[in-house]
Length: 248
Image (cartoon, rainbow, N blue to C red):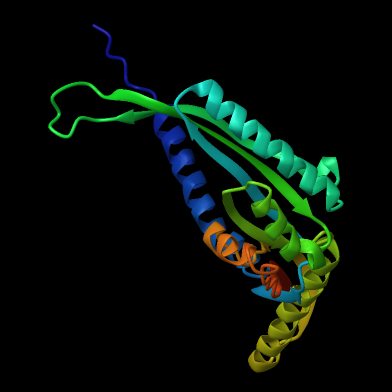
């Protein structure tokens, strides 16, 4: 009977693998040390603000009419809107600055007080609303009066804006970068290090909230007397940037 002894090669292979593993583990601290030699960096947020006076406005002018029949309500509404369009044109509003924003025709339901039956239709309501861009704010107050006198009984509000916001936005960007740089230099000096090259700049966004919104009730009260008082105020444009520098 012959006895075969197992060969020692697998043991040698296992020892070789273990040696390789220990070798890699020994190299890991050296690699970590190499990574720690990377230059330090400082990251900050800069904010820039610019205040500007709005030079245009957008107003929502509407007409709502009710009648016993849909045809009658539509006829009354169309007549009023035609007069409003004529008023806008007479005040120098270009056709491209007038856009229909909403139109609806709905039945008016009446529900029994004792819930004894289904609701019944007692007439119809037609609503038509246009968005108007006013480029000359000196005419805005008088324009609001005239459209009310022409038949508008719904004005949802006025919002002010800048016709050319790019100039103000770019100035806000310059101020945001200057703000971030000033803070970075302050931190670097306080830490006793030298500020290096800029590594990254990203814009977080633009904040430009709308200016005052006025309601239809205010227009209706003033329309019979004189021009509606308008206060367009200022608009604040805010830019936020994220910046990163190397530390030498």
